[in-house]
Each structure stands twice: as structure tokens, then as C-alpha cells.
Image (cartoon, rainbow, N blue to C red):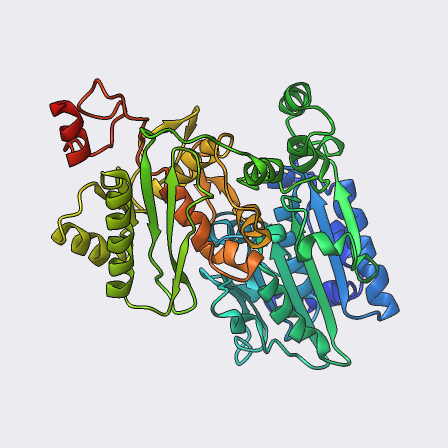
Length: 500
């Protein structure tokens, strides 16, 4: 068959499936043959494609499909097959896809698409470099394309303006639970075109019990086709591992709900500070001994709308001594406030704070340096991005910011904090994942957390800085503190006591 005849035949075949994504993936791939010998279209994938086809044939737009699942059910394959169908069966289709992280987009979503494109009947129709899939047809590289765009909360406009009147629009969110609401809201701007096939597909593990992904299965359910896939229902998952999880955690545990059942947790499964622990700390009364450590934690603002915060603890009491909040103030003003507070502690207690822990990331280094110039002892530079080697209650951290959060998490079981709804919300919004080794804990970036509460979690960072350097109560028979990390210089209070 001549090349032109083969091309005409390909066009004839794929055009039949413009409104039938299930028919396309069933009939244009060589399932069970060659490289696909051990591959099969899973039942849930077939049903979801059939759902899309019914809406397409009924001309009910926009079409919204949300898939919540446990691990390993074939979501990325579904995305790849869906993109192949959507781009191949209508000329000048436009689309955008993103994921929870840039790493997920680059190492999972996009490579899986490239893998399945090799088996596609229309493989030669498109080019797929690092961040786009676009038509090889002359003059159509800008009008017939799908872009892979890492989301940025500070630049959501990348998801705006996706209009394609009388043609087709594809919007795909992979691991959608962790994509901020502002990106969802911006993407909705593409849903306004009339006479346009608008298809929005969102998939992911249900890691959070709040947010727009959760709303697809809750208050906005009537707008979405929804499917929740149990990992036990598909043939490709490790059933032995799933059984071990069941025995270790139980059917109704949040761990098993999220990772296997595809059901949203009773609390966010990756919530770092559990709600009951926060509530208990807000109600707890603690006793402070004279020898308990006195610590200042200073989170220094990096951006215009963020806050610099000074917190104080004595022993496990983080409530009695009111925090100081500065917004839009220069670092010298902040340094003066720290100095005044430290001098007041010296005057009241006869000794300087046992630690002044300053976040020196960004402009904070100047604050710490100036405090040392003023001869304040026990000033500790805390570099959030520095390497962590500590193991906190059996947990490893990917960097210093996560390490001090782990220390604060352990202290939360014993400390007292103020009963403040805003603080509760900020603590609740702190989420985590795992580093590349899938072992070390990794606190989610501030951008993600900020999207949950509407402001940067500066207050929580200041609280965590109170525990950045391990300190024990003063043992008056020793010249240094019991744990590593404390400054070794003896202060006047200690020397006076020794001389008596």
C-alpha cells in the first residue's frame, strides 16, 4: 500500500471514533500482540472511556470525569490513551496537562504518554519533545497541540486562555488532590466556549479530604462523572503487599482507604500535625521549672505578603509568652525586637535565652549576624534547605526544614499552644510526602500549603524553630546541656550559682 493510501486509511479509521474513545482504544491498539502481549484494557478504564463516549454522543459539554483510586491501578495509562484518542480524532485539538508536582509530570505522566504513543496508529502524526505534543502537519504545530505545564500558584495564568471554538479542548490533571484550588479555578476559564468539545479529566489518590478534587465526589458531584477504583479490583497490583497493608493497618484506616480503596480519608492522610494533637496542645496545661530551656524561634519573611514572627517557649509552654508578628518591616526592626525581647528575658530570669533559632534562609542571615554583633549568645543559624542526618522517633527527614517539623511534631504531644482557630487551620494545612528514596519525610513546599490557608505558614515555622536545636532542662551539676546542639558557653546566671 502506498504511503498516501496508508495515510488515507488511517484517517478513515480514526475518524470513526471521534465520539467513541472506548472503540478507539479497543480497536487501534494491538492488544495481546507483540509488545502488548501481556497488556489489556482494564475494566474500569473501559467503563470510564464508555462514560466519556456517552456524553460526547449526547453533546453534553463540558464533560468532566474524576477518578479516585488506590495505588497502581493504571491511571497514567488511562491518561495516555485518552490523550492519544483526543488528539488523534479531531484536527486542531488543543489541550493542557499538569500534575501534583513537576517531577510527577516529567517522570511519570509524560514518559507514559511517550510509551503508548509508540503503539499508536497515529504515532507519525505528532512530535513529542519534553513539554508538548504537537502536530507534524505544516502550519498546525501551534493549533493542534497539548502542552505539559507544571503549575505555579504565583503564575496561574498559564492555565488561562485555553479557548478553541468549535473544536476540542482537553484539560487533564494527574494526581489532582495536591493541585491548588487557584489552578482549578483558572482552568475553569476554558470551560466557557460555546459549540466546543470541552473534556476535563482529573485523576489521583484521594490524599486530602478537602479541596477541589474532594469536591468532585462531594458538593460538586452532580457536575462530574465519578469513579472510585479499589486497587484490589485490578489485575496488575501486588495483592501480597495489599494483604500486608490490610493486616497492618485495617480496612477502615486512612492509610488503607487512600492507598488501596481509593476512598477519601477521614483526615488528610498526609496531614503532618493531626487535628486531635493540635486540639490537645491548645487545651493542655504545662508546668515550667526554672531550669527549663528558654528559646526564641524567629521565622524571617521572604516575600511582601509573608510575616516575620518571633515565638518564645519556656520548657513546653509555648502559650504564655505572646508571639510578635511583623509584616512589611525591615530586618533591622525585626532584629531590634529580638534584642529587646532577649534583654527582657535576661533581666527577668538572670540569663539570656538558651537558644535564639533564626531561619537564615534568604534575608534571615543578616538578622542572625547582627544579633551576634550585639554580643547575644546562643544564636543558631537554621538553614531550612540544609541536609538532615538526624533520625527523629525513627523518622528521617529530607532536609532541615522537615527535620525541625519532625522535632516539633514530637513535642506537640507535650507542649501547650494558644487556642486560636487561625493557628489550628495553619497547623492542619501542613502536609508532607516522601523524598525520592521513598523513605525520608518531606514537608510540602510553602506554595502548596499557602494555597490551603491563603497565607504562608510562617507561624508554624516559627513554632517549629523553637525545637530546631535539641535542649534539655538545665542540670545544675553540669556545665553544658545534656543534648548536642546547645551553645557550650556558660552564662552569668550559671557562673553566679557556681560561685555561691
